[in-house]
Length: 317
Length: 241
Image (cartoon, rainbow over all chains, first blue to last red; front, side, top):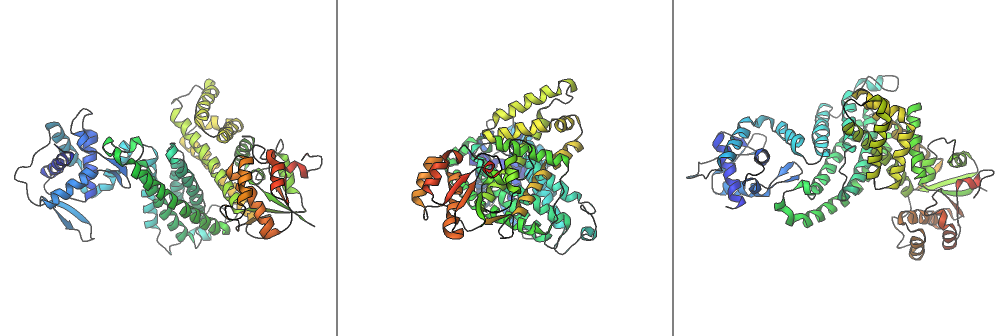
């Protein structure tokens, strides 16, 4: 049986467990990834669900084409929500829907029953935490990008805080920015140390340097804060998309099924990386220009010692 | 008449801290007056990259320690454990410079590392923030000193081309061979470009880089007329150069 046929059966199995489900395509990918991860290593159906890690988590071209087939066969149909989001739902029950093996069927049942369509992000976050091949991924996607989105939503343009009226260096405290910035440094601490990622890592470090300045501007609540933070958020996603186009190339980032695609993926990755560099450069310049309004920090003994130890090592290396 | 000096990344990075030992010449040189100091956007970018790499190396190290230290390390064996883990990480680093940076960091901040290891997450976060703060402070100082502005301590020129294929192809070829390192060749050519197209006076290229530049001093001066190559000690009374 072909992978596509097996994947189609898995998809139908989802709707057999909960016929009322209305799912975005991405949820079907993630559910089947969770199913595959829960199947025993020796289960023969695992290899019919090949995935690779991409922009929004694990993705399967086989699942994608199976969804299309089921749609064309009229088994699934699309519906739009009020916000224009496309959801897939069961249209007709197939005359004889082949089912997956007993073990797999039990796993699908468990995963689908536990799945909460109203908290898809939480489900995806758990997949990142439990299954992402590199620690950088959950840290960046779940602990940095997601809270960054929330931060931006809760600080709309034009909203100012009391920081500007507060005398002294630190203002009234900015725990949300502190957390975001800490999360970003925790990502930098676990960059993917593979030759393919050497240049990406340099771009990431340049971005982190820029973002550090941007968060300082936001702390001071300067008039330009919103624009700077918005640019930082945009840059964060560009960085992620570039990372995602590279991570699927590494052995841990894809299943064997996709080995034939690696050369093409690498070419795409290198093009994306080349396009990222000038963007990061422009972003960091913009932040540096914007940061000129900030008063310089006074180093204490410990930060002086840290810096001089680093410079000394650099000059004698 | 003021003399024109072109500073490379070693000098700019070295001038960020006050020295009392082997690199004091850089600091003393930067304190001296009577020089018009220049650099290029390329050098400035390199400095920012170096400082970012400092942060990355140390954050990676602190993360590595956190992941690999036993949950309750024996305080009496702590130094040995730190050394063993440090050695292991240093061995895995490909760049000799990065190794040197990390070793120096561990040597000079051992007390803080020890306390961090034995302390709480709050203490670890505070130490991480100090590392980040040290790099931020250096970046600020670099941006303050080194600007595209004639009144700046170091005038950063933004006019140098990305490569020199169209300007000095022959000189570039000779120097890449002599220096054996293209990034340094481009920086040396930046100084020559400024000499020809902007400053139009002799320029002294100041560096502490022996591996590629000082070692090839005669060749650089021969290929790029008007450029002299010196180390900062040459400007300090009693210094060699």
